[in-house]
Length: 152
Image (cartoon, rainbow, N blue to C red; front, side, top):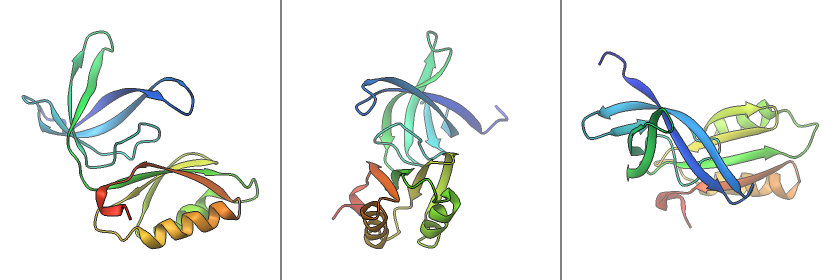
């Protein structure tokens, strides 16, 4: 196989929306025979997943594509979902604040983004800034996947 990236489908129940949702993410092929793939995206919605996690996926005839079955190895990275609550706040300005802390972001639209925090980054100042912006009603956020390295 010459392609090193594949799409993997994730089907999960959203406690917030109270319905089943689907998200697809790019993943690097680790071992096709074992069905191991490393996530190359920051999940927009899927809970308990972060970039660089290694997952087991297999072809599902009903879904018509590779489908997530379980996480094989956690990367230690964390995923935070952020909603811009203040209509006058530009999403890029918020993303730039967290870029200074070493975070990467993937924007879904002008009011929502997923933020990845690498395992070796200190989460405490990021958490403080998230709380500050939430207290000012500029954002709301959810710690969708908080690794053990980032829990206090």
